[in-house]
Length: 34
Image (cartoon, rainbow, N blue to C red):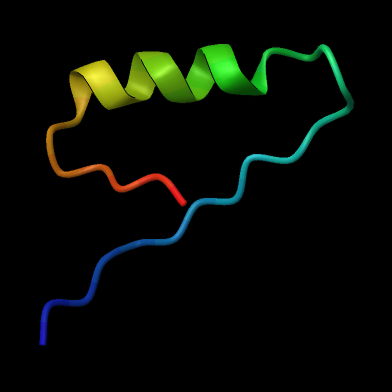
């Protein structure tokens, strides 16, 4: 079993959560977004 890391991105509306996750997904090939 491959154990990974869980990151929770929590912030108020308009804080840039989606922008952050989009940038991370372009830089990290093995990132899974749920």
